[in-house]
Image: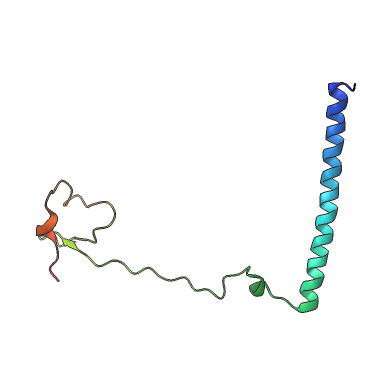
Length: 98
């Protein structure tokens, strides 16, 4: 039966062989892909690698639902409540009439 040191040495050798084989196969795959790209004149956009075709939508701010009558500050009702509205149990008096 092989010793622990012998087995770990074999394992390390196998890991190196696996890494070398993978590297060789990856290089071959990349060469094949480059050949096909050149042959068919494929662009990065066609492969989906760029976002040139998509335009990011701008988020429009939500309309204000609450207003502070003293300062004119507004709040949409989303996110953390502003200090002037925190602790108020009935927010109906701050609602903006539309």
